[in-house]
Image (spheres, one colour):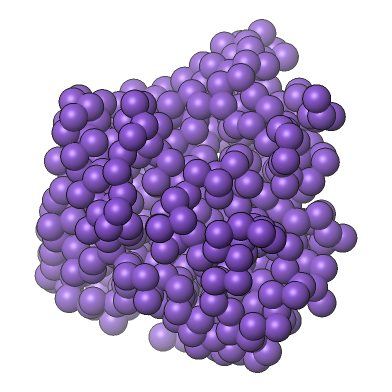
Amino acid sequence: MKNISKILLSVCCSASLMLSSCIDETMPTNVATTDQLGASDKATEALLWAMPAFANKIENVAGNDWEWGYGSLIHIRDVMTGDLAIQASAYQIWYQFWFTNTGIGPNTAASQFIWNYYWQFVQTANNMISAVNTDNATDTQLGYLGVGHAFRAMLYLDMAQSYEFLENDKISPINRDGNNVLHLTVPIVTETTTEEEARNNPRVTREEMAVFILNDLNKAEEYIPNLTSMIKTLPHLDAVYGLKARYYMWLGEYTNAKDYARKAINTSKTSPMTEEQWLSTTSGFNDISCWMWGSQMQSEDEAVQTGILNWASFMSPEALYGYAWANGGGIMSKIDAKLYARIKDTDFRKKAWKAPAGSALEGQTPYIDPSIDDYLPAYTGVKFRPGNGNMNDYTVGSASAYPFMRVEEMYLIEAEAAAHLNAGEGKSLLESFMITYRDPSYVCNNPDIIDEILLQKRIELWGEGTTFYDIKRLNLSVTRGYSGTNWSDAARLNTNGRPAWMNFCIVQTEENNNEALRGYDNPDPSGCYDTWLGE
């Protein structure tokens, strides 16, 4: 088992990256081979757990405190929308590139982190997949194989949606080299990709990527029923159906999206979170048992031991040791003022954010320590509580969980997909969800049913990284500059439709080492919008 651990720790990059620093690294010689790792259930189990472990892998080699894993990618996506405003703070440097649309081109550390992290995570899935030979695998190993395909599908679906160049209001798909990159996604790297292939590996089209991801999802659906572990840091069949629902929404195949969202709901062992669960000061959004799939940290994990490079530090203002608090001057996450105003006062979810003075819900947000209210600006979110409601001990407060997928998302995907096909059915599904689980007095009076469903999804999944994809796929505008805005000055950017910054740039080092990418990067969107200066 020591040798297995060594090989897991030695993986520094994916076959796709092939950065010179990785190529030149001397790999340990006394490690288990792939065949040895696949020879027993115990050996392949190490590769299985490497995947959820990587979700909280800390890089931070350059001292950039955004380099703390998949949770940071979720946060990056959220600050690029119009829903999650960062409180002005001396610490906002860690995410200001993304919410001010500066420094996110191919030659920046911000882009380097996203690209490197995704491909290293893909490699953990490829390691799992390569270790299992379906001709002689045990049922246990086939279950592990299904998990590998599910993780890889999730990661490629993320990257496809983030890096695919789509039309926008500022930047042409014709890049500085004169090449048209419209609808190009990322290269495909599998468990069989060689170094030579990786050095000449082009971006694939949306259609090619869709075929690849669906193949992974079908294999996950086939093999994952063999998984006996019920631990929710691993995906199960309900999560695979959920990934398929997301996949079909990306492609605009609404009948399939609706069907798979319903399959996910029916297969899931969880129900939509109750008011008590949502607003609990001890277990609010830190209890993985409430979700279909998520990440769970333990007190001994490196991310927890840092105190500050983890989910609770950045997302829980009640964690007094973290960046969100920082002696009352941290980078607290706030809900957009206009979005907050659209939440009905009878909807209990509204209490997850501090109400502005004089409003109907002022003083009704529950806190672990009520005195903290004196230090929080209006609209600050306390949706994500530190573990066990512990505000002071980071080994407890940051030994928390955050969601990858909740069943509530499936209800809202089902409603939106149905609405694209039949507005009346979509409205009925939305009203059923809202009245049953969120607000018994809810009535949908919005004539734009898609807008109303997306509104409820933005509220429900605030801080969970999904709105970015909805904005991009539906060509929606982001509006942060308006009278009464609560966004910091430099973040007050308004777009006319899909923001140009939602087409991620591939990092320059990849282009340097992959001949097929030379001249085929997305144009740099940095600085292409003027800040709103008021009426």
